[in-house]
Image 1 (cartoon, one colour):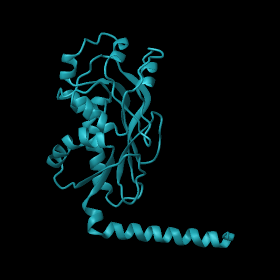
Image 2 (cartoon, rainbow, N blue to C red):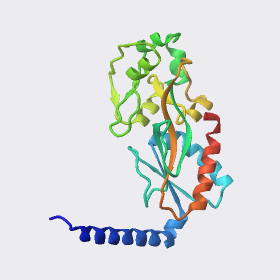
Image 3 (cartoon, one colour):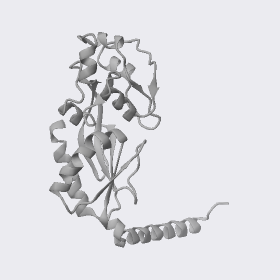
Length: 239
C-alpha cells in the first residue's frame, strides 16, 4: 500500500505536529530541564571526562550533567544533548565544534617499559606485546595501518589476541600487559599523570579530528553553551 500525494502531505504535517508536541513536553518536564546528557565512548568517559567532571561541578555548580557511555556513535536527539565524534577534519555541520586533531601514538605503562628491552625505533615494536582492538561500530586505526602511516611499510605484527572494546585495550596497557595505540584526547590525562608513557616519540596525524556534536532540538540552549565553552577550554592545549 502506498500513500497518495495528499496522504503524504497529511502524514508529514501530522508527524511534524507530534514532533513539536514531543519537544514541548520534554521542555516543560522536570527531567528535561534538570540534566544535560553527554554521550561518549567508554574510554573517553573513563579517562578524560570523569577526572574533569569534578572541576566542572566546581566551576558551574548549577550545571547538571548525565554521562552516557556508548559502543558506537550516536546521533544527538531528544535523549542525547551532545556527543563526541571522530570525523574527517573538514567535517561541517550545524551545532558542531572542532575539539582537536586525531593523533595516534604507542603507549604503555612505566612498569612495562622498565621491564622490557629498550625500544629505540619503530622497527622494535613488533618484538613486543602489541595490544589489538577490533571495533565493529567505530572506525579506529589499528597497528597495521599505524605502521603504514609512519612509513614503516608492511610490518608483520599478527595479533595473538584481539579485544572488541578499546577500553579493555587501555586497561591492558595500564596493567602492564603490553603496548597499545593511544589517542591524544582520551590518553591526555593518563600521560600527564604518568600512568602511561610513550615508549617512542612517534605519532600519526590521521587527517581526522574530534568534534562536539549537539542536538539541534534542545530546550537548554544557555546551559549547553556553557558546557561547550567549558569543554573547549579544557582541550585548549590539544589544539
